[in-house]
Each structure stands twice: as C-alpha cells, then as structure tokens.
Amino acid sequence: MLYQQFYPETLVPLALPLLEQEPLLDGDGYPGDLLSSVLHQNASFWRNSPDLLSRIKTVVDQALSENGLSESERVSIEAFKAKMERPFADVLK
Image 1 (cartoon, rainbow, N blue to C red):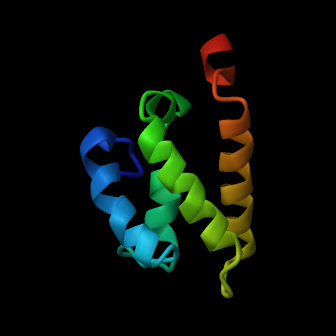
Image 2 (cartoon, helix red, strand yellow):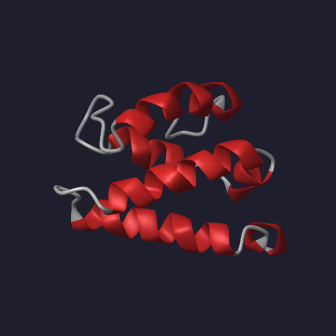
C-alpha cells in the first residue's frame, strides 16, 4: 500500500522507526523494498512533513553507506535526493 501512495501520513511514520534501525529492511519482497516504497511518496507529502523528511534524509544517507545496496536501489535513492533538492518542481508541472 505504501508504494501505491495509500495513507502515507499514517504508514510512513510507522515505517521510519524500522528503517532507522535497518535501512535495507526487507518489507515483503527484497532487501530495501520498504525504503523504496517510502521514497516513492510525492514531493508534496515530504514538503508537508518536514520532520519526516529530515528523518528519511538520515536514513537515506545511512543506506548509501550500507554494503549490499543494489545499483537500482542506489539510483532510486539518488533520484529521491535530487527530487528533494528541488521540492517544488512537481508543482510547476
């Protein structure tokens, strides 16, 4: 449900403590899938949740330093970081 962006205001706060403990946690598919789902949220969600954004940025930095990070996960994380550097770009579309 998180990947489909259902109820992020409820599910992201539940996922963050788990990711803070283990950034590449296997949610139910593969290592790192929970993080991928959390990062998949719209920029507007993060813009409206600065406290959660701060926490996920820490998780992202930790994940980038982890061994076992796949290339696709690295690309996804880098895309998220780039999106958050320009958080209002989605409004201009």
